[in-house]
Image (cartoon, rainbow, N blue to C red; front, side):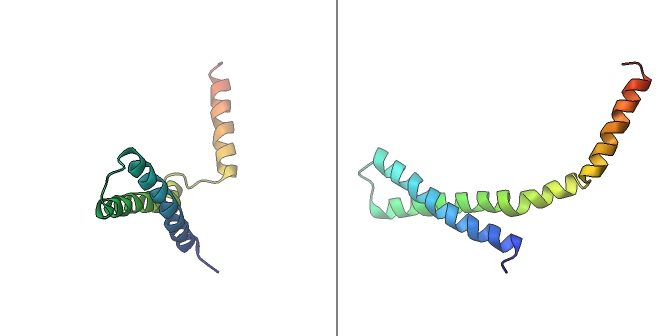
Length: 92
């Protein structure tokens, strides 16, 4: 079974390849007279940018959010009820 982190990396590779291809084709469509080495370097830059953005979205950001929001749905309901009880006690 593939772990969640490895699946995020594989997904990022696939998505980065597709997005970098489309972005490079758009750039080549706008400036049609580019040399192949420049087109290839544009593809590599786009691929790296999309890959690292995908890694951040699929692997690093969820772990960061779990650190910031560690409570469960039950805890959230308890906090919400306590807040509304506090509001009611203030007459609002």
